[in-house]
Image (cartoon, rainbow, N blue to C red):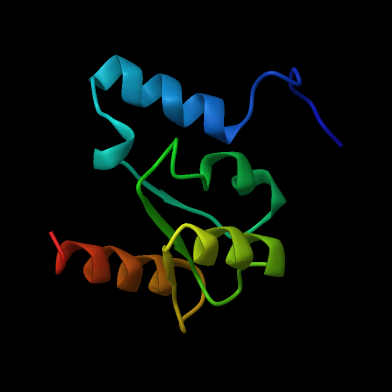
Length: 90
């Protein structure tokens, strides 16, 4: 069930937050595990993409295609490992 306008999703929300903070996609991290996260799990929205092990297959595919991080841990632990992974590379 969708309770919001079709033009608004996590991708548009993250883009607006980044715009207001003057942060480019290159400086943005997005993490998600379900269908509603797919709109923000795109390189044009965030350079650093993370999904925990419990991410559904379409989310894992999107993150993999964008050279993101797929954790072997679930939920918040998986996201934390993804943040550590990317922080070690910058």
